[in-house]
Length: 104
Image (cartoon, rainbow, N blue to C red):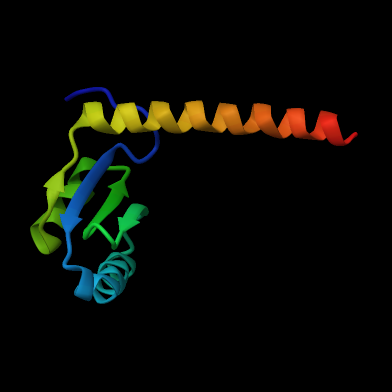
């Protein structure tokens, strides 16, 4: 099994028609809450018709795919996205510090 970073390494992306996006998001959330499955909605791109749901365990992601469909997101794509998020956070922290210095 490949080594994953982050606390939500198992991600599933599902395609949803734009017209049905809100209803599908509510149905996904209801199913996950009913089964008490820890999760995070990684991104909900209604304009593009895609939703990404993140899980801490592979078996939970598999159960989700079996019920809702979708594709597992490759581990290297997840790792790259997490690295980009960390870089963005570092940049925002640095900019916030510079702004405080200018204001102070």
